[in-house]
Image 1 (cartoon, one colour):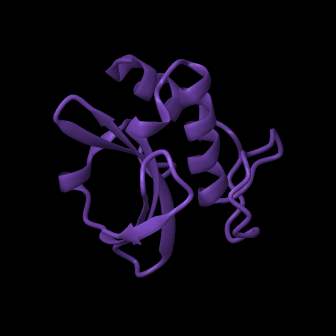
Image 2 (cartoon, helix red, strand yellow):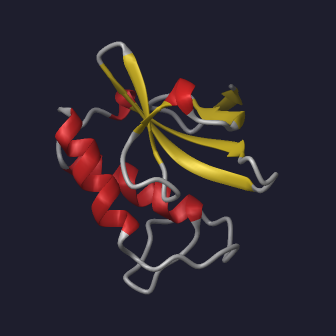
Length: 115
């Protein structure tokens, strides 16, 4: 469990084709591409396969600077929360993004809470 895992997964999944507003189905992305919730879900899946505990990963939603609703993956590593986002090529510190956060998954559960 290290930062290189985050960097690799974010970069590889971001190479898949993006399709805006397909469906909010929260299913892993296919090779044909999909939208942001599928990018976030696929990143979650790949990190779990790589050995990351589910307790360190959370799906989250927010509004971006254009006002559009968006989904990302949050990954806790040490004292920092990193955002894996299809809009950015590298994992970014949670506090540095200009997003208005909305909901976040409670780590290791299917429940959501306000961020």
